[in-house]
Length: 149
Image (cartoon, rainbow, N blue to C red):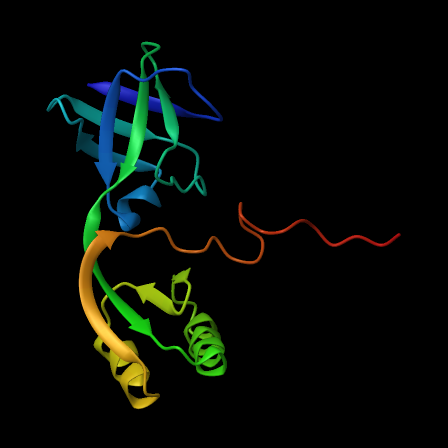
């Protein structure tokens, strides 16, 4: 089994690919298969969520590319920027992982959230695509820290 123990910042090449859905990319311990059907196990520190395009090093030195799997998602969209801001606020207030795109927000299927979006007048559609939610205020994609000059 390919034992994946280290997340790399960059890699010039890769030897294998694993494709994982969002919930699997949050886990530090996981058994999966590479695209070549080789068994692989994640043995990563807690809190190291993986994103599409990450690289992992195996104990034997091989490098593995992480790809985000297509999964069922709900997309709520509107052309009204105030309504869009309000629904993003309410979804965030529920600690719902969301992927924000121009005029639309995607989240994992939840009939309560879909109904909320419908009630607010957003167009709600189900789709299948990779899910790359925002990492949160203090996550990797946050815009810098709090500074006092």
